[in-house]
Image (cartoon, rainbow, N blue to C red; front, side, top):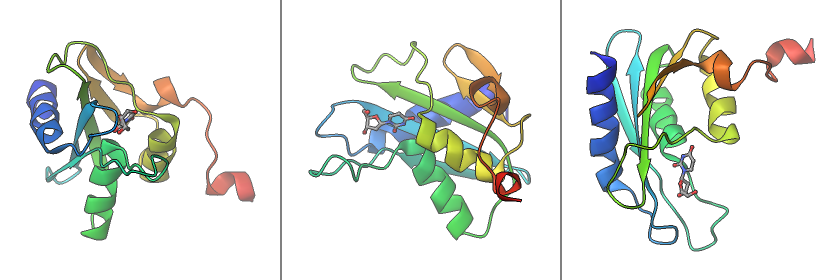
Length: 130
Ligand code: THU
């Protein structure tokens, strides 16, 4: 699957966003090492802080399905239907991704492809506890 195709899957996933409080819909499309696709959307809550981001929804779906090896994620977010502005993954999602993905993991946004290490050059991990 190309980066463009993966980004289009993220835009499609954003249609399922439950984002009645912010009005900002986010979709994520996560590609596993064996080319399986898991999508996710943001799921908001009236308590606000219990909101789950699209990226974490996708990761948790995949891991609960037994997949823990990932190649790339695309993220698309918009409050207007225009997905041209990059929707950067939040810190919590980057930390969750870093549990399963290395520096070279690809993050596809509307303006191109990045590496996980572009966003999180240093990170807390199991190594930090040794
Ligand atoms: N959001 C995501 O789904 N992913 C991110 O990485 C950043 C923010 C969602 C959370 C909330 O529902 C809305 O965007 C506005 O913050």
